[in-house]
Image 1 (cartoon, one colour):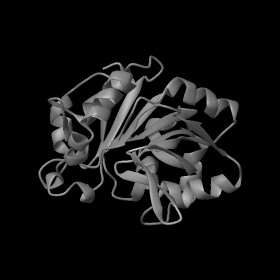
Image 2 (spheres, helix red, strand yellow):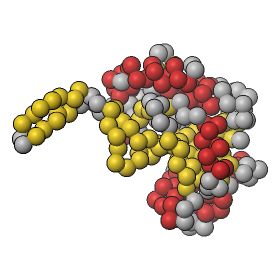
Image 3 (tube, helix red, strand yellow):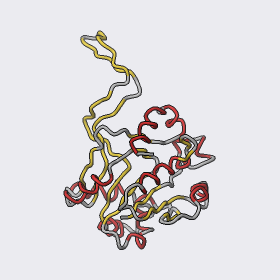
Image 4 (cartoon, helix red, strand yellow):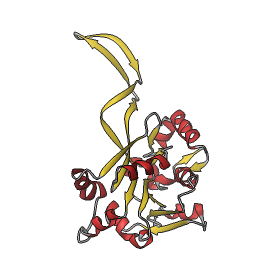
Length: 239
């Protein structure tokens, strides 16, 4: 199986930091974010190759310089045609794959990819998305009765009414064929243009990460503010 890391994007939420380096290079204990993602993926024996997509002609060049020439890591220039367009752009590299992993680089989580693969296959899915139903809030909450605060709940773990989708997907080869049908579009958004329709066909399964932590690493500031959680995730990753 191959893993595709999407490390492009303009990183607008991470400004002003991302004006100087891509969010993939956000530092964590002296190493860039993408280093942890790559090492975690390599820890699964069935991941045979990692394809990193970024703007290597721009700030993404820092990623290529960091890794240098390594066995089983391939660098592909961002096609500037949306998430679906990027996958279409590398279809030749995926042509022998019945399934592949797609990981948005700003997702830091010790997802059990092996179990996720089992869910993908057991459900006969075209796609499987990592999800969560619990979230630790960053602010305080209160129990209120008749306009009176009875109790404070400091940064509680909340049960979500809707499952939250993370940026970690297992995708079948038929996804590429679906994207090809949209090939005339200038930009193809994987979620809106492809997965939305598949959900109506009951072809997308969910893999709940349960009690595993997850961080949307949109900027170094977020990583710093959630230092304890980041350390816990890295420990869960076995890194």
